[in-house]
Image 1 (cartoon, rainbow, N blue to C red):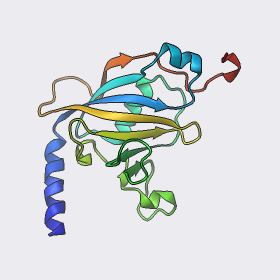
Image 2: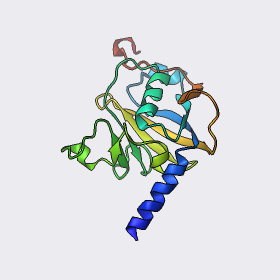
Image 3: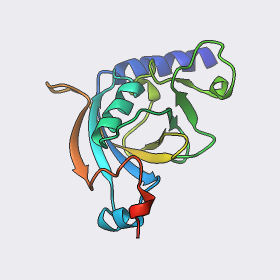
Length: 175
């Protein structure tokens, strides 16, 4: 019975990898100066990507969309009640087969896991944590899933709300 469910999920994921996902990425917390937050109540980017593209490609799109400068560790959390839910499935960077440590509890590797394989549906959310030291937390809302992918290069940013916050705040400039 479990094997049949796994096979069915794999078939559904394969079909969903041909879809176009519209994702709204919102910054929910991070090292943001009060003066910046006052001027930018909402900071989000809408990104479209194909279901066959990986979480690593989504990370790169987010990194670029928010004009970040330096790469850091990151992970995605799927299936919980939003960002930071410890019960969510974690997809991490650089997961090797048999690797020990906190990655041993990970559900998958961002380099191999596609958006379509996550099994997310419209109106669901999942989390993205960038830079484990500065703790940039994001909520990713699935705005839409289309069955056909249009022409063009994906992922692509289709909407920007708010300015991109500096990756590193100069706290001396803060009021």
